[in-house]
Amino acid sequence: MMYIYKMEVKLCKLCNEVKDLETGYYKAGGSYQKYCKPCHNKKRYEYKMTPSKYVKKLKGFSKLPAETQEKIIYDIYVKIQYKEIAKKYGIKYQTLLCWKRKGLIPNYEPPTKEERLNSKTENEPAVL
Ligand SMILES: [Zn+2]
Image 1 (cartoon, rainbow, N blue to C red):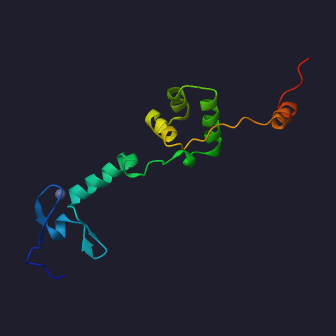
Image 2 (cartoon, protein in one colour):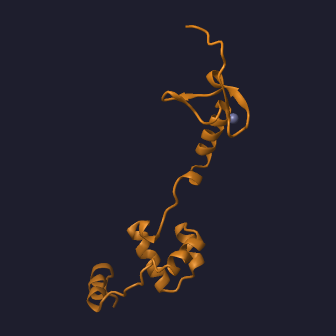
C-alpha cells in the first residue's frame, strides 16, 4: 500500500482539535465520523452509561401496562394521594399530575351491582 504523503485533516466539532483524517477518525461506510476517535468513544461511553437520556421517555398513561392502569385508576378513586401512587408504581409525581391534568387517566367506574355479586361469589367465601 502506498503511503499517503498529503495528510488530510479535519476539525472535530466536539474538542475543536484539527486531527489527521486517516488516524484521528473512524471511518464508517466510506465516510469519516463527525467526531474524532477519542470524542467518538466518549460519546459512545456516555450513551452506554446514561441510556435514559437518549431513550424516549414513556409517554402517556396509556403506555403503562393495563394492570397498572387499572390499579392507578382505582387508587385515585379511593383517594390515595398522588404522591403515594407515584411512589407505588415508580412514576414521577409530576408526570402523574400531568396525566391527570391532561385528562389521560380515566375515571374509575364502579362495578355494577351484578359484577359485584359475581366477584363476591368467586373470590370471597361466604362469611357466616
Ligand atoms: Zn474530538
